[in-house]
Image (tube, rainbow, N blue to C red):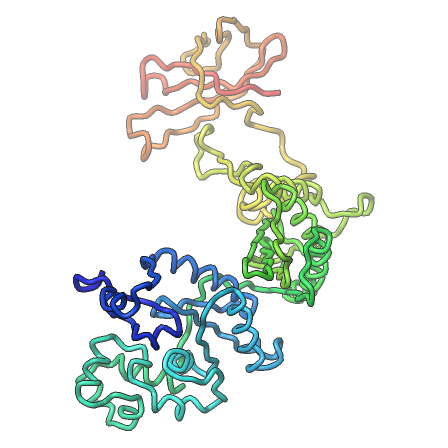
Length: 483
């Protein structure tokens, strides 16, 4: 619905010979063609289709964006044309594949995005040789410069209907009357001003791909290709001193559908066998089988995240670095059950015991091996000091009754969970002040004691409140149990 009338926003390529054109009222079109087949315009469906096409065009270049009109794609194929036999061969391949999928397309390859846009929509050439965009654009209408409708209409009203009419005019009067964007679009199309596109998908740090003359279908062939591509990427990663933390596998089907699989590693990896194992577990963990359709003709492995690779000396007996088995286990569980399936502890920035730690996904967070640089903790195999905190810490301290020889001394005996305990020895106190910025200035301090009863059981208890300084009747709580 446009201006109280249902109008045509798109039509087939040969509809013009029946008198049908864009922005035409639907009633006029049906008067010319009574049996006209019409469908309601769905912007969301068109947007989803363009995103799917953009992902499919990743087989040519990772730099794919949707142009300003919202009904076309813009690809930066700099450095990619030789992979397809040259510019003309690349254009022919794009045209043939999209036409086979049922699309009617217009495309042009040029030095600048503005020239390609103008020629694809208003011209007839599919390839502009380097430096030809200036002469090729002059006969085209001013609308080819991606101008706003009001600016293009204003230019036509004063007789400036083509790009050639404004190319040689003084720039200051044009900018004063029609705005600076007119000159910006003109300079971008002519190659006098750079234009950067914003790709829809993030560009991988490293990527390797394999193209097949005959599409592959079987899982064994896909896994063998993954191993080959991972081996290809191992040397560039080693030269940069990096290891892969996140890898993405893109499988381009022959019928145009693109499937993507992503895996995370708990630590930087380069070993092709380990990367292959991650994808194998990922494929095994899929609820639905990987639909190959008519087969995959392009398979690409991308390193979407890489971190510095800390090469450690391997153990002389085991033949592997310390912690490698742990990291491999985390990766396999994460690949099969999802990154959030396995979690690990990390220290929080607080001294209150029940708040001093948190958990995060082990695959996404820092591994135990890398924690020593930024977080407190101990890696597997390191000598840790004797524990000052219990192995079992209650989520909430449990109240108990205690008897002490002096008001601020350790307990001599206590009753907890309807059982009485007599203290044989104790150690403490360890005083922990409150977090007044969270609990308020009236909150009490804690005096912690490590106590052992006559039977050898060890407990972690605290007195809540300093006697005669914070409260006249401090209470006792049980907070944890030692092994």
